[in-house]
Image 1 (cartoon, helix red, strand yellow):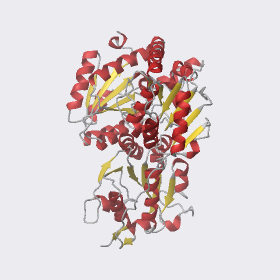
Image 2 (cartoon, one colour):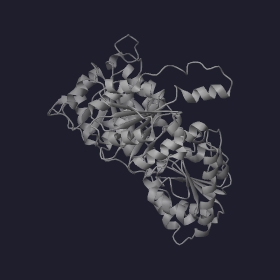
Image 3 (spheres, one colour):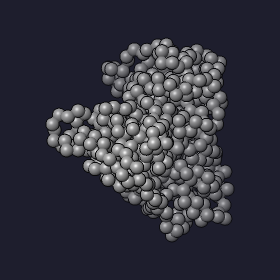
Image 4 (tube, one colour):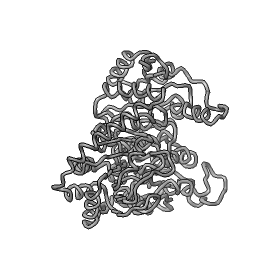
Length: 538
């Protein structure tokens, strides 16, 4: 059976388990579209039409965030790639297995600068710093080899994004072979001796502390058991929220952004960091004060001795490492330590709640209501906005991959398309978008995509007059405000114009009703909440 390379590529993607791709077709992707139309040579893949390639990239990112599985965007060459590059950057920062497949001008024009349509003189160089692998297929036979490399990275290494460019002439080449996926390698497993050494360091400590990141998403049950056996306090990054349930009495979830938590961490005499790079974007201080008695468990060997060098470096997948550590701690009783640690955690939370800013008090009130009325398994897709900044420490996530806040790259506009990708990946769970009035405008056009898909998705839009965080930062530094106070649209009217429902919540009861109705609707619902309303101040 012969087919074009574009068709064969989509067929092979399906055989690697891909069932959905996001994008906007163009004249440079027509041969790939042949493989998305349900014809005899097609893979079993659904194509979701975004309204901008940035949205397509963010949707693929949302798929990754919700599942840990590969999310795929298919875009045109040139501007399609540059539009989607922001999502690549975000997936690189947050270790997500996004695959960008793009067109590229004819292979014989690459690097020539002839001014062909959508020309970037060498497209892969645009995305190389944002990916684990960026490659151009110069003939059809390159495609199965390159996809094998990329899916092997996703399966066995730190799962950063990859980019495959298919020149127009390569897409059109006829393929006679029946491409098959390769057997993918497994992730590395920590050496038993290192696990024993880690157990000895932790049990010898008087004040052990565990720091967890998104790389530990599959290790929740064993990590919880380790925390409880040791009686150790646990702190998570924003990506690590919910791995140990946030309301566990030993958990300061997402708390490194707070000085109260960082001060507490400085008192630990042994720290176990699991699946986290201990990044500045979780704490927003250049360097946290962390003991030299540091154990780091990471799939990425380059993290073991970077900004925070480890006394003991354990290279391997977090899930089997924590299962082994849990077994190594069998019989250890940290119950006495746990009693005191729980008291200390509560004292820290009390200090945090007593020092909230006026805006944070309002955020916390809305978030408390939201936690009461949202089903426990809800996924919350957050943008870079003040409501989400507060939620990073004040909102209790009940499961891993249920709180999206891409603090690393910290782009604006991700929340809505991330939510679309998450809802398509996990249609059985509620998905709620949390966005600010400034950031949502970056990708507001994806409301149409969500409406077209009939997604029953509440979109909670915090209105505080534009780019409020930057306003506050300018005010603090005595800088006259510039470029941060633009007017907003009528979001309710805009929602309705985009075939969505729109509600302005002017009381707690209106908010509760609008949210409950939104979960049952046949389309998305934009719910605006205005900072300073009386019901948020009560």
